[in-house]
Length: 136
Picture (cartoon, rainbow, N blue to C red):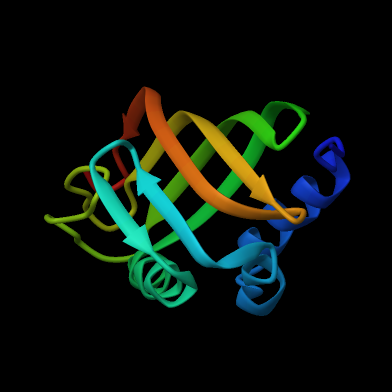
């Protein structure tokens, strides 16, 4: 059993922040399952890409690794995401946003690995902070 590669995880987050779908998608198994905040389940790379393309069309999202560790075929991380609303999004998955608002969310995320790739990803929201935009 190999240990999770934390440098590869940092590169995955960097690719996500750069919207490099090929690079971050290469970290997924073909049948990857993503459970977003315990509420929404996405199956397969394409479903994940479609979800994030929609999110990234409405916001500029950046993720920062607060901490990460792993053992065996599992990796756990606390991530802080910031969403900057590019447009009014009353039905945004994290909650309603108006253009210019920022939403900061800390999540705990568990990654199951198969062959060095992420096969199942589960997240749970720990903290959420809305910072109203300057026009509010």
